Image (cartoon, rainbow, N blue to C red; front, top):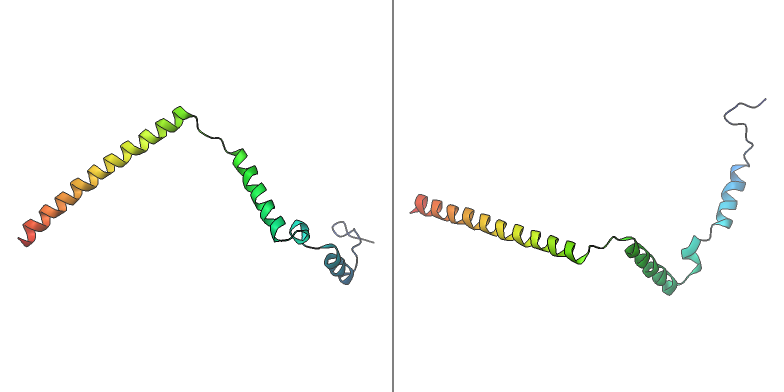
Length: 94
């Protein structure tokens, strides 16, 4: 009588391990040399780049403007804080 969970007959562990060694040759990488793997790598890069949603010119202009304005604001903020610390150090140390 077999139990419900393990009712499927499994081959011996020796046969399974040996058959895995024989059937596994390294997949796609095992069949190609270094140049074939490099070509596969570049094909995969191109396939991933085709999935990218590229921004339009107007979106790119908007994003660029936002970044430049943010950087200018941060430069101003850091300049003001630096000037404040400079004046504080002059006041404390004379």
